[in-house]
Structure formats: structure tokens, C-alpha cells
Image (cartoon, rainbow over all chains, first blue to last red; front, side, top):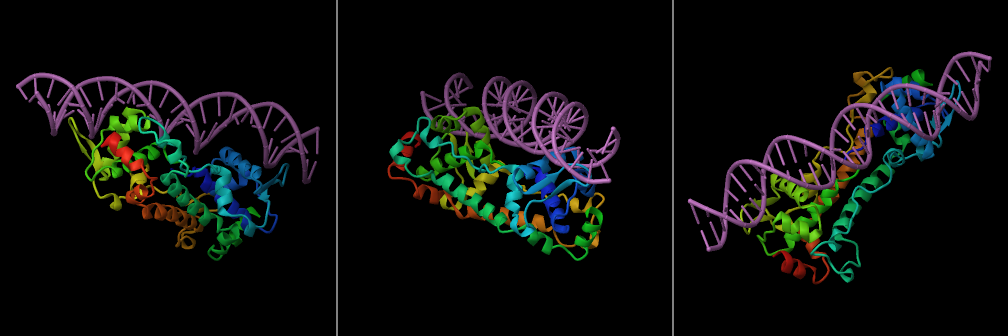
Length: 154
Length: 154
DNA sequence: AAATTGCGGATATCAAGTATCCGCAATAGC
DNA sequence: GCTATTGCGGATACTTGATATCCGCAATTT
């Protein structure tokens, strides 16, 4: 039960783009050296954010990635789900209906209690991440960080 | 980001033991056939619950596993953590301090904002699971299920 | 035309989850 | 004591997903 390390990478990449002037662009290579990450693999993960509609990509010189929406309109949940997908942590395989102790269908009209609670917990997780936007992240940055990010990436 | 399937198995196994009379015991083989699960692998996972102090195991004929504590005193979180461990979903590798854009230490006195929110979300997940006990699960069972479980496993 | 950049596919490696089997120790019943 | 049952630890194998790289192609800027 772990998020891929690349989730951390794209969260920071998105945070960096959010610090630039609106529409600010940075290439995968530039972002990779900015955080000392494997360039080829980071590039692949950034593409996932484009597919998810969070980033917009432009080819050619001076091209790269930029935020597709306003930082206040992109949540941490969207970024995480772009990398990790939306499939639930816990999948109920209805093993209560299998084997020697299989429960008859009329006793399974409502969802398995275990699945209910596991899904509720997961919903709480997603709800928390959906509350936070890239704008919130930028606003929480210490003084001077944004200025330096713009100098190096902008 | 998925829980191992064995988490579902041991959650149901623990739920079944909770349905028996206090101190009720069931062997790994019996639990495996009760839910139609691979006996050898299930046995291995049940051992993890013993190591975690949730189950007590006894060898020999009429032996097997029983709850180490009262069902009302065993939470879903404990069961999940016995299988999946307690390491966080998101591990901050402080990449903000790496690479060309490395932030100086005086700007990293407080935890990375991304890590803070990811951990808060995870805490919400764990808190939900810590609220639910095996007793709650048994109480939520449809009529007749517990009777049948006792007939087959007790 | 040339250089830069993203995109998709192919491939390789590594860790974790799934799964099985073995021998050993402990226990209950005879 | 003997035997059958059961949990325990270790060794092993397979599969899947994450990590990582490289290539050719398309698009765009200069």
C-alpha cells in the first residue's frame, strides 16, 4: 500500500509550474534537473498528467509543460489520481459468497460491512486531497522560494 | 496503491472468529475452505496476525487460531496494519532540497507542504479504520449469518 | 533546414504480492 | 510413548507493477 515515488515527482513538478507566471512553461529535462530526477522516466510520468487534462504540452524549442487550468482549480487528488489511477485500495471479492461457508444471496443484499468501512476510509482520504489545490501549496511556501523557482525555471 | 488481497482474507477470517463463542478456535485449513482460499498462503498471512498480537495460535488437534482480545477491542486498522505494515503511503524524499533548484536548509525548517497534506489524508484514512471494531462488524451482520458461521466453524 | 521537445512503443530490471512445499516443534488423543 | 494434527519458519517460484532507458516519429521554434 504505497504511492509510486513518481507521485512525489509530479506533485513537485506541478507545484513548480504553479509558481511561475500564469502560462509559464518548463520542459521535462529542465524539471528533471531542477529536482535531480531521472529525465526519461519523469518525462513519461508528466505525459500522464497531460492525458489527465491537468497539463498542456507544447513541442519544439521553448516548449514543455504548463498547467492546463488555474492553480486554484487543480487539486492534489487529481494529480495523484493521474499517476496512481482511481481504482480503490480495497476491492471486495465477495469471498463471503464463496467456499463452504458461502452466504446465500438473500443475506448479501447489502454490501459487505468490511467493504463499506474500507471504502468509507478511502473516501475520507480522497476528500482530504480534493480539498487542497496547487494554489494552497504555493501560498504555503516560505518567502523567497517562489522567486527562486521563477529565476531558475521561468 | 492497493491493499494486498490477503487483507480481505484476514479481515473476513477475523470477522469469522469474532462470530464464534468467546475463545472459539478455527484452523487455517478450516478457514481456507470456509472462504475457498489457498490454504498454504492463507496460513502464512494468519501468522502475521499472531505476530501482531491480534490472534493466539495453538498447535495440535483441535488447535488453530482464536482472537487474542475481545472483538470490541480489535480494530480494522490493526488487522490491516498487521498485513500491510504501518509505513506511510507517501514518503517525502525531500526532493525540494535536491538538484539545481535545491532549496537552502533555512527554507526547509517546516515540513514540505505536499507531505503535510498527504500525511493528513492518510491519517484520516487510518482514523476511520481505527473507529471500527470486529464487534461492530459482527453487529452489522444480517440475521442468521452468525448462527451459520458457528455451525460450520464452531 | 536544423535543433528542440513531447509522444508512443519496446525493452530491461527490481521489488512486492501470490503461492507452494518442506522440515520442525508443539499438542491432543489413544 | 505413538500418532495425527496443527502452527511456524525458511526456501523457492511465478506474476505484476514500478522504475528506468532508448528509439523513432511528429510538431514547433528559430
